[in-house]
Amino acid sequence: MKARTGVMDRMINTIEWLAAIFVGLVALNIFVAVVLRKFFNTSIPDAYDFGRMFLGILIFWGIAATSYRGGHITVDLVWTAAGPRMKRVIDVFATLVLLFVVAVQTTMLFDKVRGTWADNVQTYDLNIPTWPFYAVAWFGDVCAVLLIAIRTYRLVFQPELLQEARPEQKADE
Image (cartoon, rainbow, N blue to C red; front, top):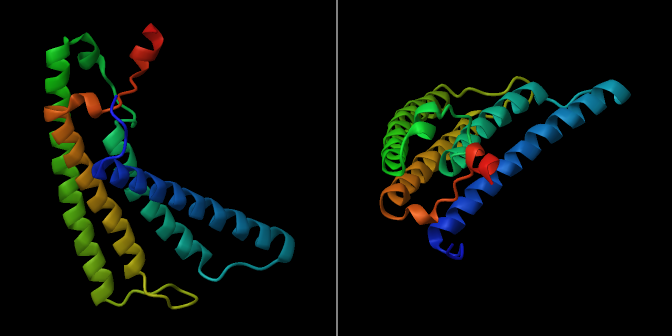
């Protein structure tokens, strides 16, 4: 296995770290809101709005992180029964389908960003514009498209660079 020092690998690691940071922000928002409500009978202004927007950001950045690694939930009955060449064909086809779906999703999410900006949608308590949160979520989706494209390229031209962790491989070891 080659050392993970390439530009693409640094970009992949950065995107995965950003996804992890958003997990922390969602957890922190929930924790602080519960503690304030339980022990101090107060709340964070717009805690609900921040929570749902951070969760949306987390979802799209999570798509980016899991799409490259192939660590999402899959049903691989046909893949498991296939030979090595057919497995690679299935992987490339599935990744191309995923790339298409996420690219369309990214386009639609950009329309949502543009719409919230044009309509000047704001949070309830603090009147903070919501479009920057949508823009960060959209950028996570853009990163997902980029990572899926990198995964597709590597599946076709550099399959040895992908770190596949398949459950059936672990069971066989």
